[in-house]
Image: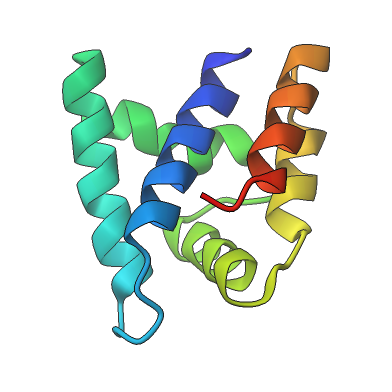
Length: 107
């Protein structure tokens, strides 16, 4: 699996685990915590992890608010847009399989 897809899916998994729809700004708050945690685990800067869902998913997603909006649509209403964008950026079959597996699980 490509590092880009791995990083994005790890961020999404963390957000999904900490998402509280009844709290304003929950996506942003949880995303920041998750990015810091992943960066620390990998021994890289937070920007390296953030780049996976900002710059490396361009032109589909170019800024953090756009990413947060797609994540919220996915979590709140089951939107498939985020999954489709990731599939468009998959490097190989293993990326596609991992994306499909991720979005077919609920936790």
